[in-house]
Length: 164
Image (cartoon, rainbow, N blue to C red):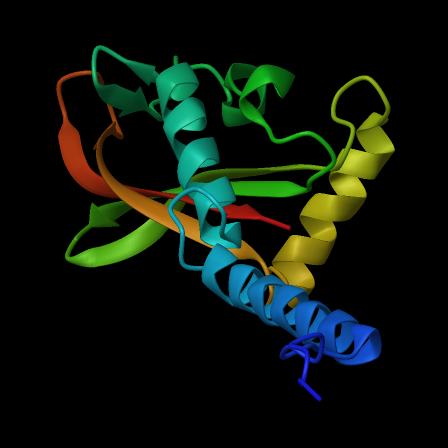
């Protein structure tokens, strides 16, 4: 009697399906954990991109003009520089007599300007003044030159953009 080799090493179908499922779950968990480390995928990126776009709109010849004849911050920032569906707060500060002071600030609710009213903007600005920005907001800052009293008097300043 000869033995046939019909009993080769085989895997049960259920065990093979479970092994493949575990592999797929492991790859999925790894992809989710690595996603926050990749460039361009974190909440911080939103504020970084927004601050670049806001700066492009508010500077004139590389300087933010905050003197009496200058345009208001909320008139300079357009909807194109704001992320869709996000609330944004912008603040410009300058060094005055050795201390940092706010030169101007503005807040832009989600849907600005098409889906918001002046009352929505004023309410958001009051909320930001009273309670500050939320702890989970994405915040970016940039050193900028600020013309405070006149175009000739330029001081060191900071542009701060918060997105939530």
